[in-house]
Length: 354
Image 1 (cartoon, rainbow, N blue to C red):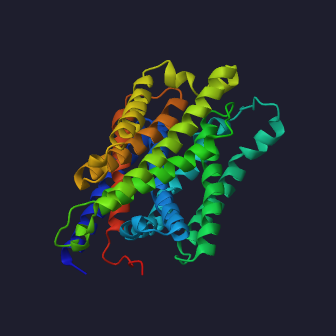
Image 2: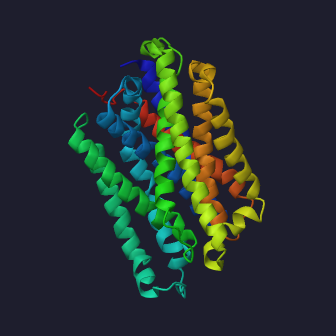
Image 3: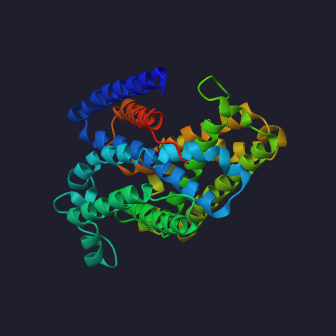
């Protein structure tokens, strides 16, 4: 246990706590922006933590040399689950004071209003979030390198992440629904978790991380190919959902896309499409990129940042009346949560996977 590692964690905790305190002042000036930005940042962090654990289980099932250098990073990230769940607490307040269906006088607009009223009742949503949190923490404590446990964990994760995306993200526009939204949320988490693993494992060797020098061209090609697979899966699900809704052109179905395509949010969509799909698709076709540690790591880091921007894209445009306070609250919430999670991930007291 090195003294520098301890101080790094302490500095991250102090910095993250100060950022959280400043961010919480936002509830005074704009409560709507406070909950919206917290939700976007937390959903990004949840995708990283849950996606890292899911990729770890996936390697348990598939095996292969490609995952060996990534396992320790994924293990450390998924071990930050308690901090992720602690950061989830403000969302319970959002359930009762932020979502459209939590407001007095809200009436569902669907063919099954009784079911929608029950499903989106604050008490039932709160209960489901508690169940998700308990399951995620319990699964984080499960033993690894056992195929039966890994398969069970992936199934539970797929169900709970999909349902959580409906409860927390899709219900921001309660009159809108898409059967593939849960699959898209799973793809986002898996892509982000894998990118985080590559970004950490491809870091150059240092005195504290001498094992980082084990990068090999074949491993780089495997990582690049798998990263490309996740990008293609995410793009396919997102485009298929858009194409189906665009072709039907029904008022209650286009309600989610209208504020994203007919306002200034369109520019963020162009950035995500260009930098998150076309650019990496082109770059990852070349071995020179996949076999280069700095190039591959730079691409993984860009995908991590785009993971946050995508969470912003699926969250903030769904909320009417957002003010300029969003411009400073959104990045501040993300930086604060990242610092607190990193403090736990980099903690020298963190048990290393056997």
